[in-house]
Image (cartoon, rainbow, N blue to C red; front, side):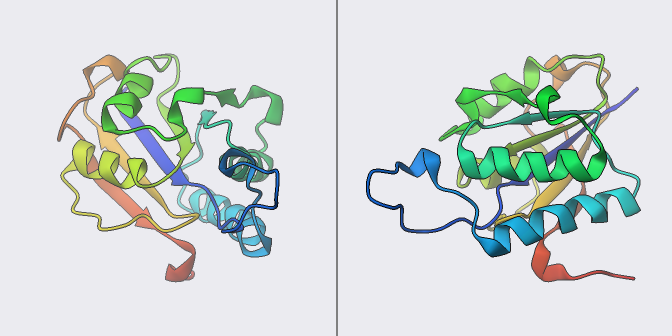
Length: 168
């Protein structure tokens, strides 16, 4: 079966870190905690629920992934943490995707900008200017092996963000 990748940017987080807290430990703010489950619900309505969740271990990305897991009824403990996603560029993100388990045909990956926006354009030649917080894309690939995914092999199926509101 063809592969489908859902790329999700973490929800809105506090811009300024509290003293002693690193960028890595920045939490989601109120809006981030509200938007993440809403975006997960939108994918349910489109029948686009991931079989596996892979996330940056940074607090804001992992919390976003946990909101999606809850809505999708995926056990939070099954979320795969992938440290290289944090501050990853296109090359690093492609290595993560190429190593994904072929037992799963639809995988959601939770990460950060600017890496995710660059990666979307690399995979799908999509001309996305900026993936907003809690924004997501779904990219289809005509392969049954994650290893075959490379530059411009994907087709952008969906681009959505909290500001788009609901269509129905």
